[in-house]
Image 1 (cartoon, rainbow, N blue to C red):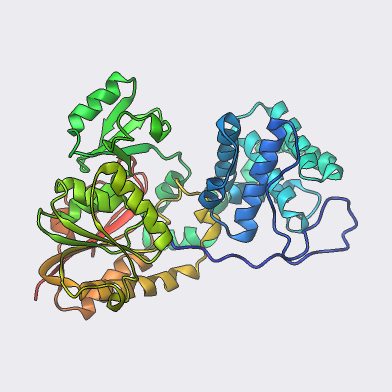
Image 2 (image 1 turned 180 degrees about the vertical axis):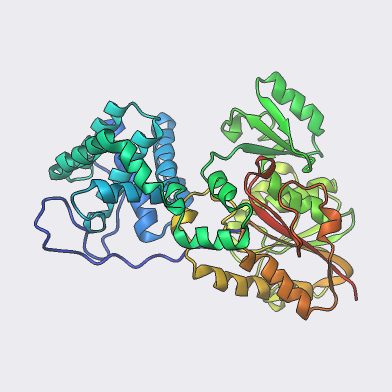
Amino acid sequence: MRRAVARPRAARRPTRGHGCRVPECPPAGRGPARVTVRAPTAARVRADAAVLVATVVDEGRSLDELLAADRDEGSARGLKRSLAYGTLRWHYRLAALLQRLSSRSPARLDPRLRALLEVGLFQLVSGETAPHAAVAETVEAARVLGHPHAAGFVNAVLRRYQREHAGLAAAVDADLATRTAHPPWFVEALRRDRPDDFVAVLEANNGHPPLWLRVNRMRATVDEYAAELGAAGFQVHRHPVAREALRIEPAVDVRELPGFAEGRVSVQDATAQLAAELLDARPGDRVLDACAAPGGKTCHLLERTDGACHVTALDVSEGRLERVRQNLRRLGLEADVRAGDAADPAGWWDGRPYDRILLDVPCSATGVIRRHPDIKVLRRAGDVPELAQRQRRLLDAAWRLLVPGGTLVYASCSVLRAENEAVIEGFLAATPSASDRTAERTGAWPGVADAGPGRPVLPGAADGDGFYYACLVRTD
């Protein structure tokens, strides 16, 4: 999966003159920073979660990137992640509630305090924390954040929600975008693109993602590994199409999986595993994984051919390629790992064409929102046409590297037609040598069987993420 990087947002302008003691927005450039004061764990964790949420919402930073730098461990880390993910997942609904609850304009509050109020509301709405603890610790977190004078304000907002929650919910939930906590532009785009399925997609986006594994069949059969998981106390479920995919319950840290360190299994969503199924590389094939990082699909292609195909794993980011190398080492696989721009082959290509090409394009990532709820906040409507232009450039460039009779699989983790069907329609119209063979190779797949071109698999189908695939064969 390739998430296009969101652009940082401009700092909010300071506001003045409303005459209250509730902290206002900080001066431009003073972005939220991690809480460093010593404080009781429960309050500090909530304060830290609020800082994470504010940094995503107001600075446009990725939650995964922020959590990668988190120094907490154990239960504190787990609670912080849960609060940050949950608050961002429901941000648009929580913001609508806060607008009705607050005596101050939320837009004029300090971003960290505004985020803390959403964290507190999330705890009350979700019911995952005892109400008295949610209120008390969130009030204390205001002090941890350096806003002791706002403690009474935070308490008043949360207590008012407890008294009026039924009427508030009815009011904000009258709007579909607010009820499902999505930006209005995305709801309208999805309504237009997937009119029969858009509500189901919106609801699926708010679910908790399952843990899907990919068994390395060079080290074990799927049946053998499934039996081992069952003996270890896991519930194990198969996927109807992805042959190496197993879904397990309960979800655990990957390091606790039998044989993970030895390369017997990897974590990869089942729908993402369909890329290798569709490309169907054979031993001896020259294969290009054109946007390879972090390497899950590269490794899957090699596993399915017992390491006997020759894969070039290309990515524009040298830093991200280190993840590819790490995955290859753990799984005992080899590939030609190169830094380069797939849209500019002159900088890296040796002139020899490829039998098969996987083009997993940078995209809006709107098919994986349940795994990355910050996408709701980070993505903008204006990003989509820019991404579509980039995707078309990548496709045009990759096609020139394919042998006659070769196969190219175009993949994205977007659910929007502009990045999927529209890109392929335009390419097919301009490329007489390209033939769409997706329908004949995906008849048993879960999800929507559209008229094409290509095949969307919407979020939640067979409990997988949302992807789009187009299988194109060069016929000249």
